[in-house]
Amino acid sequence: MTQKCYTMTDIKRTEQTQKDAHLILGVRHNQDTFMNNIKLKVVQCWDDGVTTDERLIEILRRHGAKATFNLNAGLHDENRKPGWTYKGTQVSRLGWSEMREIYEGFTIANHSLTHPHLEQIPIADACREIKEGRDRLQQFFEQEVLGFAYPFGTYNDAVEVAVRDAGHLYARTTLNVDQSFPPASSTAFHPNCHFRASDLWEKYHKARFEGVFYFWGHSYEMINDAMWDEFDETIERISNDPAAQWCHVEDLFNESERNQSGSNKSLNSDGENAAS
Image (cartoon, rainbow, N blue to C red):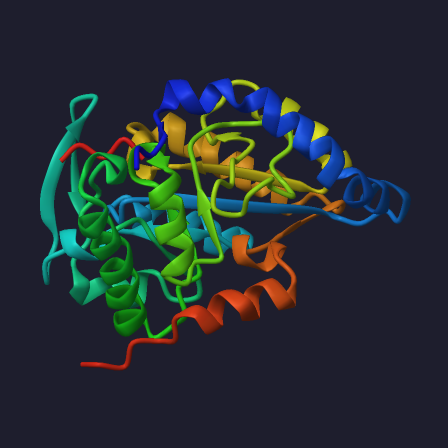
């Protein structure tokens, strides 16, 4: 059976369909948010487990911001190691020896075991990438891993099913949409924008009516102090907004959805160029 492969071009073609679905799925959610003056829920996630996450987390902690970090359990060594070059800057991955301390207090999500294009490999291999990635992260961090982020933002029908069957509550894509929540499918969860988007604040203010603002990125994309200072100001501004509150991505989903996902797979007690 031929599976439909969702490349970034294919995914973008579905944007209007997603918007139409949101008009139906989100109407009551939007009314409740607007009429009851509910605070805007702000969520963020960061990919790849790189050393610049340490600087990013210092900023998040200083401003009391929550975040999810999407990690590839098969790409880390005991200590830090060089990865790739981004705009002339060396990017390195964190080592297992420091990751518990660095990510303490934040949510961990699965980004697959080794960051392949999951839709381009045999489905059995994709299932292993998804399941083993989750199992290793759960065992190491001793917390349930409910989130997933598609490597490179691409997937197909079979991969989406495999992500759900492995016990994930949601899976983030890299398609940016005006209304991120509620998603038409929790395993094709589109964010509002990248953290460096020129229209971030425009989307932030529009999201007040929708109730959720979701941004994502990679900390290694900040390659100079000016970019870090701008990011610090962004987090501070959101934290100081009395009409907004930081949340973890998984907290957006209701208790029954969380329980259903968690029951699929319990905690396992048995002992490059990353575009997204």
